[in-house]
Length: 109
Image (cartoon, rainbow, N blue to C red; front, top):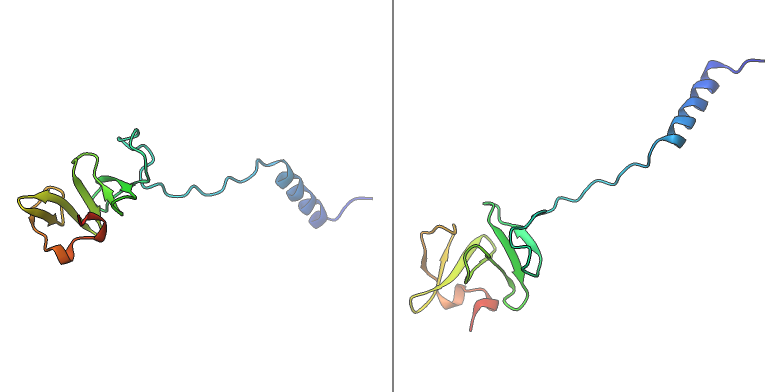
């Protein structure tokens, strides 16, 4: 007695699924899969402009390994300059004085 074509197709489909390798879960997007500052501890990420940053829990901001003393938080870069802190939307500047009230809490002395 022969099987109906539909039952045969379902059987073949079940056999194919049983022998297929397990599906790999989707990889989460990694902000910085190969950080250039691999020796720097902390969470590595990239800013929207592609600058690598590393989270500094003591400062509650992201340090910029390529620009020592610079930090990034909420779309702005910060660095010490002159008599206080400076801020910029881009790491290359232009930099302007940052009023103490606008400085992130972790960067205040």
